[in-house]
Length: 224
Image (tube, rainbow, N blue to C red; front, side):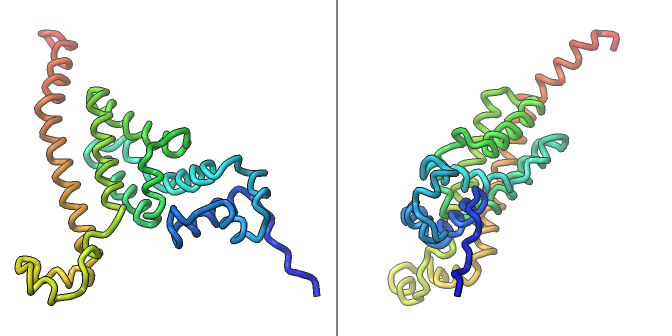
C-alpha cells in the first residue's frame, strides 16, 4: 500500500505549524528539529525556505502582528484610534501568548510590525503630537498591551480558600478569581487603557491644542 503523501512544504505551512507548536508547547521548547518532525520532513528541508530559526520566529511573530487593525489611524480621532488599536493588538497577542516575549524585543525588520509602528506614529503626528511624544505614546501603549498578554492576573491565584483564609484575610475571595478570568482580565485592561487615554487627552488639551490654536490664529491674520 503506498504511503500517504506529505503536504508540499511551503513557507505558509511552516509558519502555521510553527505557530501551532509555539502555542502548544511554548517558546523555549521550539526548535527546528521539533518543527521538522512535526512536518514529517528532514531538518535541512526547512532551510530551503528559511535560513535560520530566528527567521521562522520572525515570520510567526509578523503573522500575529499582521492581524492587528490599525485602520483607525487613517481618519478617526486619535483617542478612538488608539483605543481600537490597543484592543485589536491585545486580542492578537492573547490568542498567541507564547510568542509575546519574542515580539516584545521590537519590530526588527518584520514588515507587519514596522507597518503597525508607522501607522500609529504617523496617526499621532498628524493629530499634532510632537514626534518625540508620539514615540513615547506608542511605546507606552505597546508596553501596556504586551504586559497584559503575557499572563492572566486572575489565574495567578490558586483555588485554595484555606490558604487565603488562614494568612491573607484581605484576599479571602482570591480563590474565585479564576472562575471569572475573562471579566477580571478584560476589566483590568479596560480600566488601565481608559486611565492612559484620559491622561493623554488631558496632556493633549494642555500642551498640543493651545499650540495648534495659536498657529491657526497666526496663519489667518488679525482680519481672519
